[in-house]
Image (tube, rainbow, N blue to C red; front, top):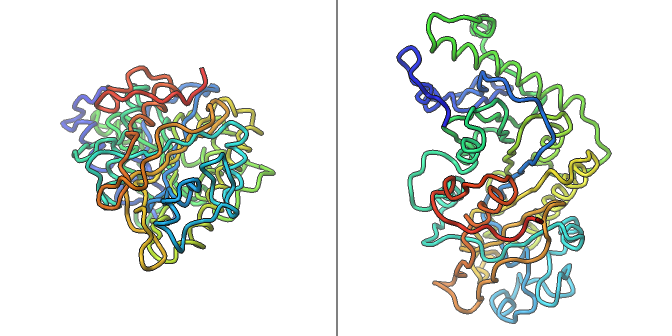
Amino acid sequence: MANFKSIGGVARRDLLRAGFGSVILGATGLGRSPFFSRAAAAPAPKPGRILVVVELSGGNDVLNTVVPYGDDAYYRARLKIGIRPDKLRKLDGHFGFQNTMVGMERLYKGGHLAIVHGVGYDQPSFSHFASMAYWQTAAPNRGELYGWVGRMADAMDPEGHANYVVNIDTQQSLAVRSQGHVPLVFDDPQKFIRTGFADEKEMLASIAKREHGANEAEEFMYGVSRSALNAEQLVRDAWANYRTPIDYGLVRFGLDRVAALIAADFPTKIYYVAYRNNAFDTHVYQGDVHARLWTYTSDHIAAFMKDVARLGRAEDVVLMSFSEFGRRVKENTSQGTDHGTAGPAFMIGEPVAGGQYGKMPSLTELNDGNMVFTTDFRRVYATAIKSWMGHGDANGVLRGEFEPLPIIKA
C-alpha cells in the first residue's frame, strides 16, 4: 500500500477520503470532489497492457441482446417483444445477436469477442443503485469503501503514480475509488480546465505556483494542485492533437477519448467508461429503444477496437463490458421488461479467445420469474486482473477466491 503517514497532523488517507480522491475539472469549476492528481511523477510511458471497462447502466436485457432463438421458452415468455430468428444476426444454431449489433457480430465472427453467459451474484438486488455498487466494489451485500478497479490499481502500482486510472464521466465512479491512487476524471476534454469565481482565480493560481509549504500537509496540497494543472493540459493537448478516420457512431460515450489518450502514450493502464443515465432501463416499449441502444453501443465499441488496431495497439488492449443486472424472462404488459438477474458480460480484443463461456441459465427453472445466475461476476473480474493484467493476487483484490475464465489467449 502507499505510505499514508500523517502529514502536518492530517493523514493523506484522510485527505483522500475528505474529497481529494479524484481530479474533476470542468466548465462549471472546482466541484465538491475536486479533480486532483497525485504529485508523484508517472513512470515513462511504455507500451503495455491496458484494460478498458465499459459499464452499461440501467440493466441491459440479455435475452434481447444475445437471443436464445433456439429455445422455444424464450418465445413463449415474449410473445410481443421476442425477436424472430429471421431478424437476428445468428452466431450459431441457438444464439443470435440483436439485428443492430453489426460491429459486435464482426468482432465475434472474427474471433475477438467472448460472451460470458449467466453472469450475476447470489442474493441479487433489483435496485440500480445497490446492484451497481456491488458490481463497482465487487462486494455484494457488503459496505466496501473502495472500488475493485481502485483496489487493483493499489495492488499493481503501490506507489500511486499519476494518471494510472482514468474515469471518463462527469463524476467519479465508485469503481475507481482507491486508497492510494487519485483517478483522472473528465468527460469533455475541451472543457477540462479548472475555473472558478472571479474572486477565487487569483488564489487558485497562487496555490498552483507554490513549491514549498509550511508543513508536509501544505506540500502535499500544493503538489496535487500543480499536478492537476499539468493533467488538464495534457488531456486537452491529447484531444486537440488527435486525428482519426474512424467513425465512432452517433453516440460517443467515451471510447474515442480513451483512444486519444492511448494515441498520446498516456501512462494509464485502466480506463473506466460508462454509458450513463440508466439508458438500458427498458420498462416500456422496449423493442425500438433497445435496438437503437445497441446500434450506438455496438458501433462505438467496434470503432474503438478498429482505432486501437490502427494505432498499432491491438495486442495491448482488452475491453470488458457489463450491466448491473439483466431483465426478467417474461415481458411486462407495457411491452418492456422489468429488473431481473443474470446477464451477459463481454470481453473483446485481439488477445481474447472469442466464443461463448459459462452456462446459459434455464428459461423455465426460474427463481420468482428470474434466471438463476451460473457465473459469478467476480470470475470475469479475476480474468481481467490475473489473466489479462497479469496481477497474480486477484483473490486479494476481490476479497475471495474466484477462478479466471479461459478467455485470454496464452
